[in-house]
Image (cartoon, rainbow over all chains, first blue to last red; front, side):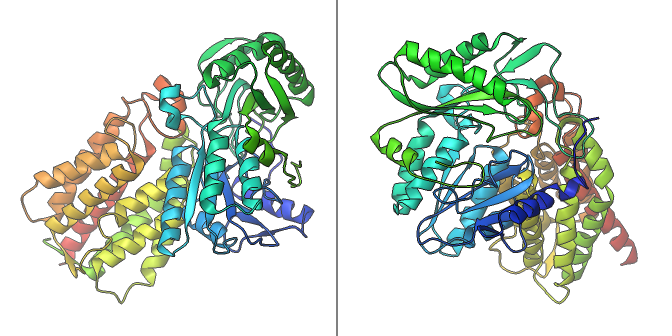
Length: 330
Length: 215
């Protein structure tokens, strides 16, 4: 039995949202009737709307902020929000310049966001969609569109937030965001499973002393299961896979992100980051910025992922633009 | 019975909704084996919304509108993949149709066949992917094969074909949803969405049996 500090499982998302709003009453508000959070002062720009299943906090619900998303639609734990929730969330921040949707590439999310986009279209509200598919372990390069979205959400949401805040048109913000998506690559390693609130057992489990390379953020299987190795060896393997798949090489500039999945400690994440920095230096790859945190989590899951964002001048300009939210600032 | 009136169709949908709500523990159990265990809760939410919507539609006369509204009630409220999929099953074959005051075997078959086509278009699932399509597709095929005009027999055949489809899902690996991550470990368990299709068709057949007796 997994222990969690909750009340009724079916109230988790609502109560979490209420707790977040209690902590930040001046900046955020709930969207009436649905599980969505929006920034209070609506800006005269293309609206960035993100969302997905809950349980990955602070992504997506808490990535609403200046230079980030204008609103987020929250589903139940690990389940996409319904089209009604997405529609209400998007309409609440629409100022007539269009909606840019950014979310992870999962069948449930795709179905529900597409349906919401169709309903918006019927109302004469234009939208564009960028699905994040950064997990290189989830499908081969030839089937990019089958890849899942994991911690690379951070880079894509960051760039999309900066692009819309800069006043770009919907089509331009869409182009820049797609470019960020196409230059973001991640891979993770899972050590231990996660439990949906209210359930007795984790959604998956790994034998003691074994890890899974390429494990998805809901426990989807990776590319190989193996014995737990020292951090440096695991980081070397993950980085090698990333460089191979992305084609990132000597002379390129990257931003990096080591993401913890929930219960992996800051100590472990920084031990990983140390090796990542050494490896990139050895390869002659310039590092513009390194982020180490747990922004895209999976409840109490143990494990971590490494993400690389290959920069060009345009992406760097949007990456460096200021942004602010309770958990992520630049 | 040869056809359903508007009011009978409304009563049938209410009966289906009550049936699915009462099957929540069973659907939860089925889904917990290989999914997130939330399918029963999702169907309950959707069907409660269907009931609320149907109660406001007692004065209508167009069956397609009734089915569209039932589909929208599910689609907008359930979340996950099943909201869109089951909403589309009801809505897909009803949207944009000339009003119908009665439903015979042909209309019933065409409605579900178009619903299936729309579901496949949206969800992109094929037979054998361990989804609700594995129950709905054989059910529609069985309805197409029936050349008679008795709705009860039509739905009985659909129900039987769906039951076989549910049974067949036990042999499949999943291509969608949480069960996808289980690969071969999902084999041996039935799909929850396919199970719901079977329960819906079973409830529809039961209703025609009851309504036929009182006619």
